[in-house]
Image (cartoon, rainbow over all chains, first blue to last red):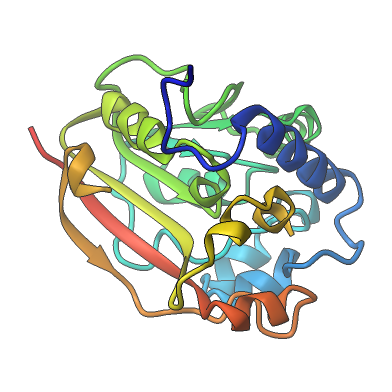
Length: 203
Length: 44
């Protein structure tokens, strides 16, 4: 008997499909996807282009966010930040610039190819205050009450068990601290049969 | 769900046409899907 009857898709199957999709975004970022990617997307979403121009292609080309988690609040110098589903690290590097050397930014991702790319870019940029860890949004490899801010971009909608993800984000945040994320929302109801169609979750 | 999981003072930014002109635009239009920025505070 399932202990999570509210889930409409199998989390493991969904996770496998998401991993396959974003492995392709990491290794072949200029292929055609159902979403925009890279520098044109950063402009569409309103990122500061002066900052984006300062980042190498490897940090930007696999970006596949759906909004701008920094648009409602800029991060403060010295803050500790966790980026849930950091991909190739674009938002992590934006956060690193905003918090400065006195801050810390930890990116979490489950896709090996994305982690390899983000770690290589971190090394090439010489960012000692940035780190990437392998993990899931449903089980963040971060200690309790560590973060001043959790950011995320286009990731939570791809998680079958959103309640567990929000509880996990709450666990790693200090009391009174902030979650600032971007994600998609639908303005018209999605039929139950479409909600159960796992292919629609990723494409 | 944010408020159910211990967050408050939720702010939501304006919609962004994140899928406009992409291959997934038709499905996005069918369900009026847009991107949004969210800001929420952890309640103690």
